[in-house]
Amino acid sequence: MPTPTTDVGAATRATYVAFTSTGFAFASWASRIPQVKEQLDLDPSELGLLLLAIAAGAVLSLPSSGPVVGRFGSRRAVAATAVLAGVGLVTVAVGYRIGVLPVAVGLFLFGVATGTWDVAMNVQGAVVERHLGHAIMSRFHAGFSLGTVGGALVGAAMVALDIGVTPHLLVVGVAVAAWVPFEVQRFLPDRDEPSSSSATRDSLTAWREPRTLLIGVFVFAFAFSEGAGNDWISVAMIDDHGAAPAIGTLAFATFLAAMTGGRWAGPWLLDTYGRVPVIRGLTLVAVVGLVLFSFGPSTPVAFAGALLWGAGVSLGFPVGMSAGADEPALAAPRVSVISSVGYCAFLAGPPLIGFLGQQITVLHALAAVLALLALAGLIAGALRPPQAASR
Image (cartoon, rainbow, N blue to C red; front, side):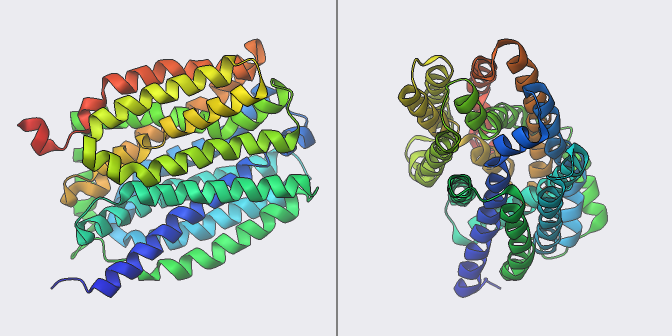
């Protein structure tokens, strides 16, 4: 029986809420990283280890996320993990005044939640795509980016108004835990007959598929680049470019705004030119942006670099998710595998950039991202749909 149009419309709006809310929650935390660094008196390598807590939580939760989403459905998975993410932010908000350990615990809980949340909302995005009959996944990810822009701008306002980290993150955590579970009740069913055993079997099979793993490596490269921008742009602007704290946060918001614009334009670009040419062109844009940001002589040049960097990495993650969901029956396990590999970037990225930053400044350490972007451009051919690849 066809799904009523009104149900698909409601599910589309609910999916936007899921993507936007997780972006807003993450950027709310990321926008306050410089203040947390100062309060806890952390050097770049110590901050990198603290940021590792989010990635560690996500990476630990991702391998089981495919079976969890397959068994319980994306609606219940997003609802439960939104509550857990809210608890994580509240823990950070309260623990910020106590010490490093409670902040690390809160970030770990936030990472556990967002790992499964990410897989579940991408599975629902693929379901909505199939019912609508045209590509929309990159616009869901634009919703995520829009949420990050909103979170970063609110964070910049909080910094400018001298409002503390604790009240800021406390309000965000409570709002996410209360609002998202209510909204996602309008999700469409993921499959007609969910099965615990079949979900587990499909997940194990997906780990042995060369194309799935190659897409995972591709997503890893783009996630590393995106995560480096999220975690370090504001710090590099303040510590190395000598910008004021509010200016550093605005550079972060510029990066996120560019990603949002690229993701909103994604469907037209991809339908017109195809996945592989678009991704390779945007990879070049990201490389130019990184060079300008890392080696540019002035703050305006760094802002231009952040803009190009954000635009260049905008479609890597969503296109990887869409490629993993090309065959609907295996969308959940493949998206889980690709996310698991990709999220290792968030595990490796913060400490690597932090340790390098301790030696050569954070600004120049970001140049390490260039090698991964070159690799992503080389293996982008794996993004072709299976039918096109076989032809």
